[in-house]
Length: 264
Ligand code: DGL
Image 1: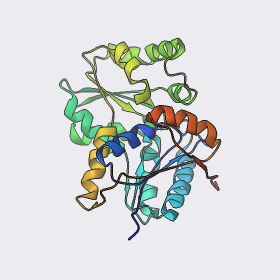
Image 2: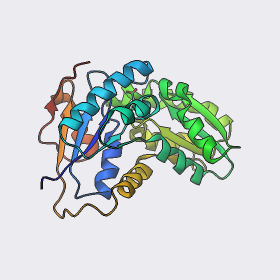
Image 3: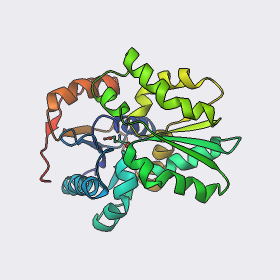
């Protein structure tokens, strides 16, 4: 019987932070990653548009016979998860719920900050998910729209990125949150810099680990494969550029990135 892969997608490079955690936890699984580089960023777009892109990618992944789709994008998880679950034949898991769970387990003082795209913040998806678990939590949200282009342009370690991060994080420090959710899958790439600015008393929560745990739990002990899993990567624009940047982020050279234009 042919082994079915796990499909995973993001607007661009950010979802690779989730892919890395998934491959570490589930090394025998095959993965198909889709980076929607033609349409990045999602965070400044409407629910309708992000849902349209997400459905097109999900349908492509279903055509590749995936057994499960992981929405490795907070924006798409916040805006399109319901539509994806309604319209897909395979199960769909997002990153918001695992992120909210990790943050509510981490906080000591009940004050949690959420860093995300404009669309994720506007959707209140994290605020709702955290409040369900911790009705009295104080939740501060901060949109960080410049972080995604900094990561996509490989500017994560520049002084410009540092200055922008200091500006975004100032209200978080003032409000004394003890836990900060990296509520966009691009942001863990900036983690060392964010951790330095926030200081050692603030915990940074990357939903990647809890998402990988959720996927493992969902799959149960069904996977009997013993060989190392295969990774296939698609980008909706300029696969050469994506291959260069993704190889660096994954810490391993990608042999091929296929071009798959979306009909959206
Ligand atoms: N990495 C995505 C997220 O987790 C989307 C960023 C964007 O395209 O704006 O929200």
